[in-house]
Length: 226
Ligand SMILES: *Cc1c(COP(=O)(O)O)cnc(C)c1O
Image 1 (cartoon, rainbow, N blue to C red):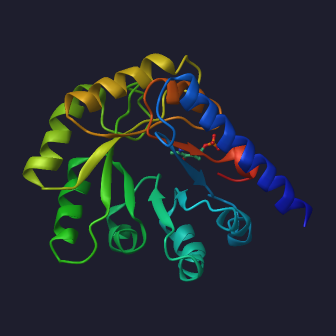
Image 2: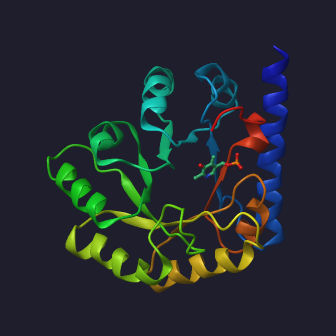
């Protein structure tokens, strides 16, 4: 299967580029985890990565993840799934049942709804607060000037298991100042996890302190839908 061979060589290439970036930054081996973003790609394209030992994956749509992952998780129970796309409150119950980490906690109404869902006594996926680090009008995430208050509210008012921050910097600008600013915000709150860096900028994110990079295209190739 030539697709699987290409996929694996791209995957191993990304793994070594992450390791190289970690070494270049003088950080300890294993300081950064690779979250493979499988969105739009079918379950059969996840299999070669699972066979290669990749266990951490991200999806941006609850419905797509529900169609793809339960069967794969049955084969590979130690898979960890991250939700990296917007979470609507009407999909919240399904998301909590499937995902291990919700990276897109971005508004008070969602925090309240998650807290209510967690209070039912089932699973409690860890959360990352998504910060709209460039303050872009059309982008998801809590605005930077409200982030400190929102993080406090999620932890203290709603008791949510917030473990870190996530961002997507503005597309057309140098991402480094945005990565640094997210890292400072996380440090201010004593939050250990920083999800930042995608196919085009993950080495810079690793240099700025990322603990997870979310890489899709550089592993799976170009997506033909969003
Ligand atoms: C699609 C997506 C990624 C991966 O982007 P690539 O450029 O394909 O690596 C990372 N983070 C989020 C939130 C995404 O939606």
